[in-house]
Length: 311
Image (cartoon, rainbow, N blue to C red; front, side):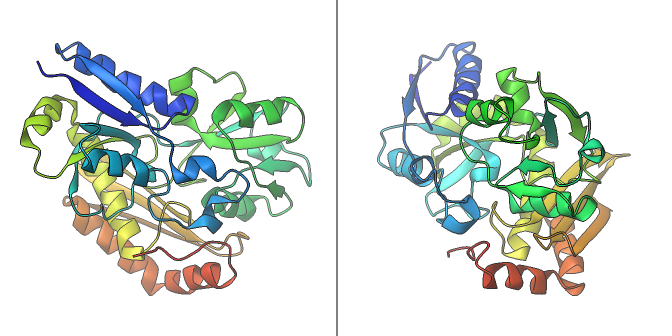
């Protein structure tokens, strides 16, 4: 079996993900090396991600190494990948997905409803902020950046009453001690692709693609394809207040989606079922747009809360 070089960000979670894929490849007889690559998103730590707006801020440098032949594949969190990949790349595999939902973490309180009036909650996600504000407009939402350990430490130190993180990252790192509630998708719709990994390769690299085929999961690919189709049709990136969560129900794909004003004053929801992932995502986007999603997103960009996707 040939030697394979994996490109990965250097965060604890990114390295867990890269090592997870490396272990699966080694079990197939491959020699695997992980190359740590620092990305734009890793270097910008003092600005809310929604205000940065660099397309592929967590992937660009890794893709450059992939294009140059320094690595053979890249392991990403799927939600970090733009819905339209740059020319010359393809997603070779989407492995079985972790829990895509968000987790409520707190030292004292067991769920969002239990938080005291005016409690400080940490998140830098406009999507999470909007849905929190919709159910608890009294909460004091504050930015929260840093890796998982940094965010949990800020909670432990009392800087926040609660924080919201992706359940997948906490599960993967085994850091679930402060998880008090896995928030149902009907209350907090996850980000498109949340909890899923994407294995990216050079477009047309059939030899590497063949070695990765066993990693691809049909259910994860169908669900995330649907979610990303909705995101693409809405013209949004991963930092805007759009949620999408698809899953198999009774032999069909069920899609929950939202577009929300960051202050929680307006939340548009859509629920639909279908067979074709891309058609279902596009149909849900059309439904949301027909009810004013474009106005909400235009207002978000107009207020400088996020920057429009860069083409």
